[in-house]
Length: 149
Image (tube, rainbow, N blue to C red; front, side, top):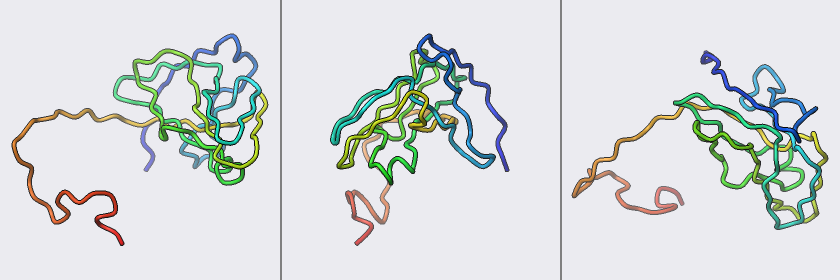
């Protein structure tokens, strides 16, 4: 069952003129492909915030997650840092994609090439209550890897 669509306003910035808006590549795609607003080269081990050429207004109660493109990650070793990155509903600046090159070769992309994907998601807020003790579980306070081999 598909959830209802949400309306997100997009403002194209001057350096984003002529670029495609983020779009779903197929009917079943969860993420909208986003393109680079400028040519860039990312050396091995380097990272940068790549401009998208647009800003968005996300409705309250939602976020937009920035995620890597699987093909770039597998073939080039290029991924998004802080994944999934979160664009908050009250942010109105340019969307920038934080890319890192984990590969062994420089990675270059031209303006208009797909570099990441955007996934809108509902946000549930938490109310924290400070307590003196927590309920006990089978795992308890075991750390990383405490449930595996």
